[in-house]
View (cartoon, rainbow, N blue to C red):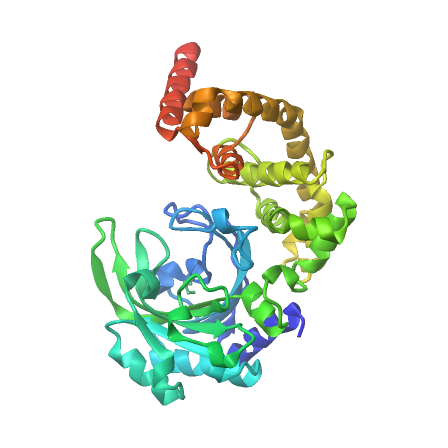
Length: 436
Ligand code: SER
């Protein structure tokens, strides 16, 4: 089944059950200063959950553009090496605003996975919050075997979008991807074992968390569910990495064509190839939603992503700007669902190219500066790059701090962050004095 059909099957299923299909909102949340980017399907419905906004429907479904690169939900360090974490991804979700609650949310999820998508129930595991006896009972009623229902604490089974806002206990559906059915064990769920994948998160929205962290029960308990399209596609296409699905393969093919390297080389540099194609999607979608590379807030996140991709490209031999060519594949692939990509095509290509050119002017010099700094015996001895040098890399050579950290971590080194911060504050002071 193609990813486009999977997305459509999900949405059709919920539309048939009385849900209104709501288009994805922008990656840039409107009227929400607490959040840099939409990081879940529920973000556009935050005020509906809180009873502050009314909509003409009590049930909704969507395929939401999400970005997890900052704040409470930040996956950037896993991207590339992990087969199933991304900066940008699509989250499939169904939502009930004080309409149905746990029982129906579970029933729908189970029926969709096991009957429409035909996933074997013998590979599915359920997690619930350890206090939620009701959830355990309802899952059994839905048809899940008792021994496949596992209890976890707040870390795994209590979901919040950020430090404040709607939240509540959750229940997740996990899928066992291993070759041997008989090797399944409950300890695998929520462990480092790559055979167990979290697929779908059902949140029972019951509270609002305020700035002091106090939970106030909502008068209208609701449902917020989220399932990453990329993971579901990998499972349904029978592959063990999202990057082997039709969502990423065309991008990887383009990247292989650009590098002109052999497939052995690609296998040896898998994490780098993966990170680049991941970033190309995030960058194209961010620009389509009005973000442009710059020095602060959202704009700086975009700049960081382009510069990281540009650096990664250089490590696999790409010395000329290349990222806009991948963005064009993203546009071709996704514009049917997200027409803003086509509308903003020229802007996407132009902004990526000019940002890449700008970074490439200093990238080689910056890398030479870094190599020299790393030769310093005290740096080698302490496995620590001084904050002053890391700041110079940022200030003079345009290296985002997280890029410097990434390069260092590959060699077992760190940045002296305290000194970096002191240097940053000193520099701010100097600029302020100069402008007074
Ligand atoms: N908001 C929850 C999540 O992002 C479920 O949609 O996992």
